[in-house]
Amino acid sequence: MAQPLFRSLRLWPLAAMPLLGACSTVVMDPAGDVARQQSHLILWATGLMLLIIVPVMILTVLFAWRYRATNEDTDYDPDWDHSTGLELIIWSAPLVIIVALGALTWVGTHTLDPYRPLDRLAEGRPLTPAVRPLEVQVVSLDWKWLFIYPEQGIATVNELVVPVDRPIRFRMTSSSVMNTFWVPSMAGMIYTMAGMETRLHGVLNRTGKFEGRSGNYSGAGFSGMSFWTYAVPETRFASWAANVRRQPRRLDVPTYLKLERPSERVRPIGFGGVDPRLFERVVAMCVQPGTPCMDMSGHGMQKGVNNRAPRPGEAEGALTREPHEKGSSPHLSAPPGPAPGARDPGHRANRNLTWALPPRGPIARASRAEA
Image 1 (cartoon, rainbow, N blue to C red):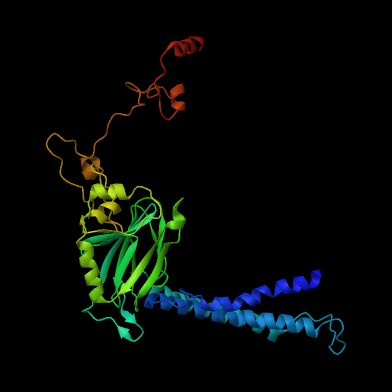
Image 2: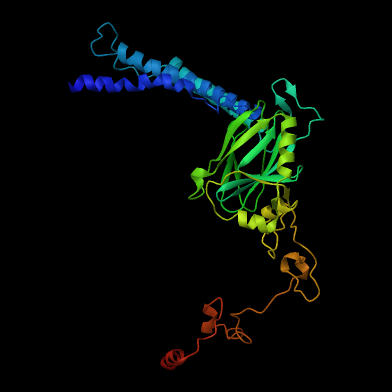
């Protein structure tokens, strides 16, 4: 009884196979040209590796069958230890595959560089100079996504709408912990990090509703940190932007400071106006009023937007001074006067790199008296 039951259990996975017919492999059948090129790269790499894997699997079964103990027709040669032809096949075939994979990866890595602007909309459709990319500024919050459209002057939360067949230039950062921006139908995953700006270029070639998510665990609300991406015709995108622009909410600094507080499973929100310098201030980590902005010249970093000359009576910050303008202040642990070991090389104070003032109080006095 147990054996027929075990056999029926082994057939259950085969019975479930027809149910997978309705599944859509988004990564292998995306809606954007960049993601499609990435899927082709995966297929080519898999095919090249199968050129080794499949023959090895076949030969494993063939050798086990040919040289089985009951096969008396096969020659038995226990002293065989070398074959030049076999060695050439064993080493040359994997070497050729590795060289091909290396060349394919090198070309694909440079062609699909996320920082590289697109040069085509799809295969056989080169990008003309008249097509201007749409810029979308992305900020990963806890635990939601903020999308700012600087050209349209609007912003949304957990809803990304883009026109079909128009390149999208994403500028991305994070308000706190690291996250990963990923729309599988459009392009690959790119990290968002606080105090840094990363970029991604992509395009969607057909209308539809596509899922976006974070691919990097970022805390308690990570499971609900997803959004929908809508690819619509250009005219419908303009109509959508006009509707959002009529929203009474405005994304200024006080509103952003409330928005960045941790919250989970936030419904889509639209802002009819947005502070034009907000994204730069998020990157420079100076949204909070009175916080000095980072002033870094690295790739993707923006100059501090809060840097200004000090007002009358206001202390000048060290970050705004040139190196030759910066002085020095007294060291808190420096001895009051010349160091005891300055003129006495054998003084015990020379054993320490710094000289600390002795503590005060009855316990300290008693310790010094015992010494």
